[in-house]
Image 1 (spheres, one colour):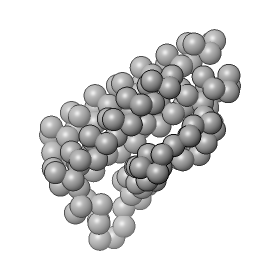
Image 2 (cartoon, helix red, strand yellow):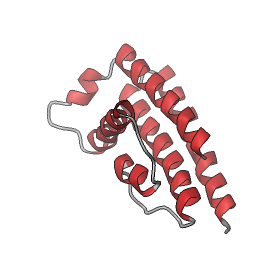
Image 3 (cartoon, helix red, strand yellow):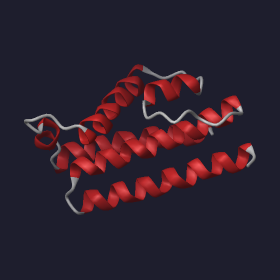
Image 4 (cartoon, helix red, strand yellow):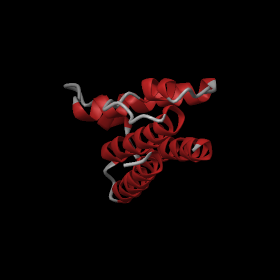
Length: 128
C-alpha cells in the first residue's frame, strides 16, 4: 500500500467515526459520542503522521503524541482540546466508580465539545 492510499484510508475511517459520533449524539448516548469523536481526531492525526513522516502511524490512541509525531504546531486552545479529548477515550474505556464523565456529558456539554472537535478536525484536514 502506498502513502496516499494509507492517508485516504485514515481519512475515510475518520469520516465514518465522525458520522457515528453524530448519530450517537442524536440518540442521546453522549459518552460514546465523545469516544467516537476521539477516534475521529485520532485517525485524522494518523493521516497527518503518515503524510509528514512517510511511515505508518503507531498503533496508539494518545492525541498529544500523535500530534507530536505529525510535527504539528498547536495553539494553546488546540492543545487543551486534545488533552481533554484524550480523557474521553480513557474514561469511556475505564470509567471511575462514580461515573463522573457520564454525569458531566449532558446534551449541552457534549454539543460544545463536538463543535470544538469539528473545528479542530477541519483544521487538521487543511494540514493534510
